[in-house]
Image (cartoon, rainbow, N blue to C red):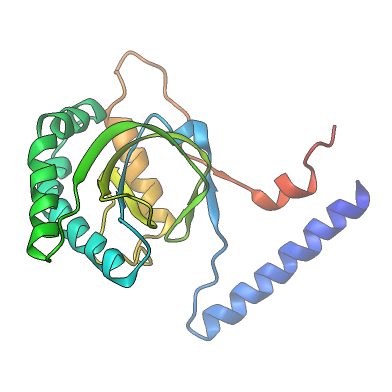
Length: 213
């Protein structure tokens, strides 16, 4: 135990020195921050667009579909006051969203079928900017293009964290936490006790002390 504590202290010192060096050179030093699954699982709706295949053409088409769908839903979901309201909008506009996606597919010379689902699905760990959304079952709105065997693009649809540029480098941990906490706070019943804030796991300690009594 003493050795592990010493290792932790040394690592923290090294990270601190690295951080100072990177700040002086004008570069940020970030570690992946993993959110606590229980804090977020019932607070978000994910958005996934799954390409027909991993060919360059199908992946490009996927991004065009993404852009048009986000353009349609963004203003509505930005004004949604609750998860239920966002969910209902997606249910009510399912056919319109599919029509928009299908139009993009056809305009680009493809005849792929397009379907969409709002369901709970199991996803692996996913990095979003400098934030890790942990593995688990989440509610997600998914658009499936053709055989849907290609890589998917994803974002957090509600609270609205989707960015059309698709890079997700513009999303930082502070922005994600602030948005999630703001949404969680607005959805609380006034007669309920204050809920715990959204937290990150300290992955270093978790690894070092895993399975230790």
